[in-house]
Image (cartoon, rainbow, N blue to C red; front, side, top):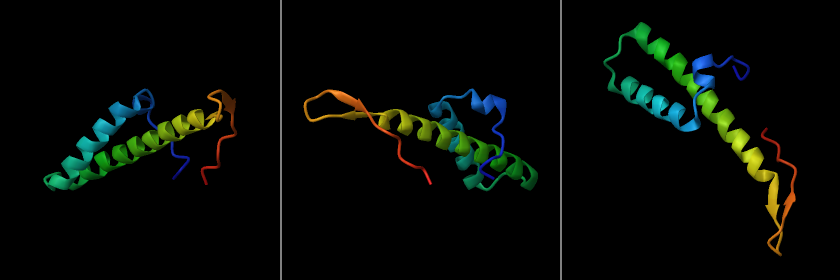
Length: 84
């Protein structure tokens, strides 16, 4: 399911926006008062939000890994590590 498409409205979200909505979905599902069909629908949205957040974190980590501080305070480029 790693290659499942992320809906356009989610793809436009910042990490923080997506996390906030994901947390709301988790709270709603944990409440247990959601009908089955709605539970499935919001669970699917939650899964897409999770993938989006993971992608955003992976991108941020790769950007950070490109800069490695030397002992003298200057920076050098570094190769990103594998995410497998």
